[in-house]
Image (cartoon, rainbow, N blue to C red; front, side, top):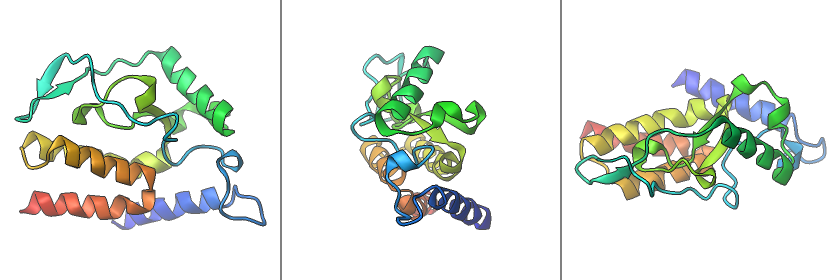
Length: 172
């Protein structure tokens, strides 16, 4: 928990230092990378060409299949449309994230992909893994999992509360 808090504080500090001196609430164009998916570019989409069905709920599952050209296009779109600097940063600092994870029934389409910085995925990956674990055990429905991941990824300050809810479900 202390490690998570340190990472969150570190990410918050590094983001705040990128803001204009007169306004610490920087617009996206003043930040080097996104800290959440842009809803108009990445609204999130569910798998519509499943290779199988998963869990007792039978949710459609798409195998991971994102071509490197699409990954590059997603990064370039975020830079061009929102003024980020993702393509100028070290590629190893990012992953192309499925806003709605594949294990929750997300798709490989561009509308479900965004460039996620490591300071963000260290916060949200635990939520993804625990949600999918609970789905596989029939203890969390797809709609609840998707709502939780949306809440956490669209507002990182909500991530600890989402994770706490999931841990509570697991401990019951």
